Image (tube, rainbow, N blue to C red; front, top):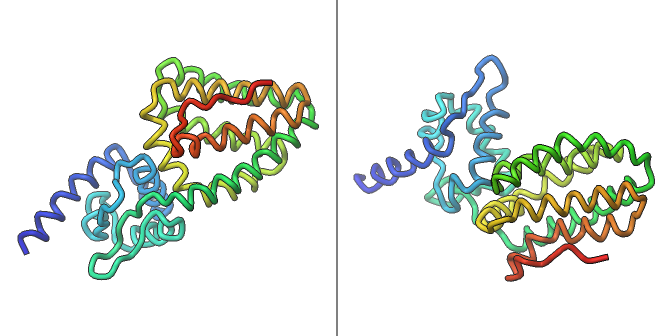
Length: 242
């Protein structure tokens, strides 16, 4: 019994650190807020793989009831970020290499199609990316990959929006959780990784504005597949030269 209590006390510290600064607005739906807080904490490895999720204890840490917490946990299970194990309960899953490969395969197909479409549209629309790129430049100057990652999401979402297919990005989001975990664990540890990704974004935008659909697709394919390059031991692969 003492061992169980000690284990729970240990993970409670992980819970508190993982959601430090999170404030749940009780005037709004709680389950989506809890889901986003837990999802971000898992993806950023603040709740490591194998960590048990004790519903009552974690709900207590967040100051919420178990009902909305359980609903959030069910959503995380659908994304395969948590799983139920016999005699254990809910546990944060390990990063699955096969799921990474499948998600990257699908994302590459979708995003190369997006940039090909963008290359046929009014190039001035791409100016809508200027604010996002400016924020990315700031993150790059500080070599802050965690902050860059958040703005990276906005960049790719806006590409889909400008292309008139925002649903395409929502499809990508639903399948890329294991990719995001790998990116943050691996790429955040590589000095200058934010700068490299930023340069890739600039080249993609440049190709789109030039109306060069194939070049834009080539660059996007390399950009999306960079996680696999690192997993395969080639963190320094460059963007394909023209």
